[in-house]
Image (tube, rainbow, N blue to C red; front, side, top):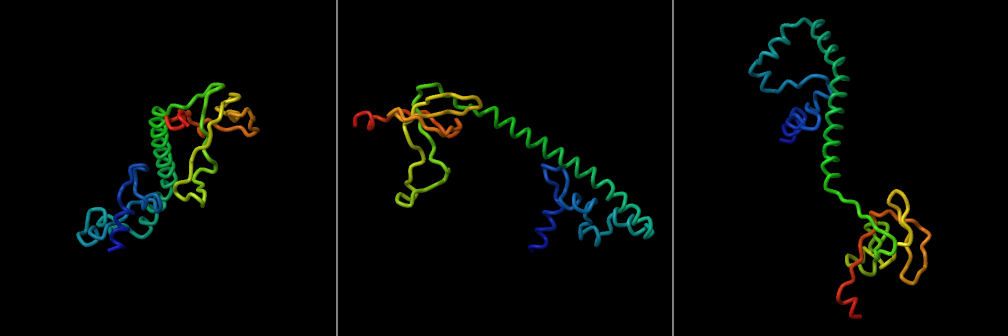
Length: 169
């Protein structure tokens, strides 16, 4: 069963490349087992060829393989650009100004404190935006006015909105 599934995977067209993985590898489309038993037109033409003609046609297909691979690469790149354009249309970068209250992501992202496990905090703060630099970089300072030396990219910041519990503390 696995061999049949793999064969089906290798001989079915992919939307990204517009061709099959088999054709990209070998330069021509695979002959399905059913075509051999039912004697399809493609197989019949292949049997009518002399060995030298068959070799010449295979070499011509291999010459076209480079062109087919480049076309598949162009299709993949066009599809990736289309996905990136659709994604970038919905993304709105966060912009902060000086004196905004922000939270800073704990870096490295995904770090978990063994003491808290899955309940580890993911943000720390609040911090105040001390300086806005080019390229979306920010210099922060603590609420106690200690300026941090390390610059931080804006994607690791989010607006700080104190909760009612924090306000009443």
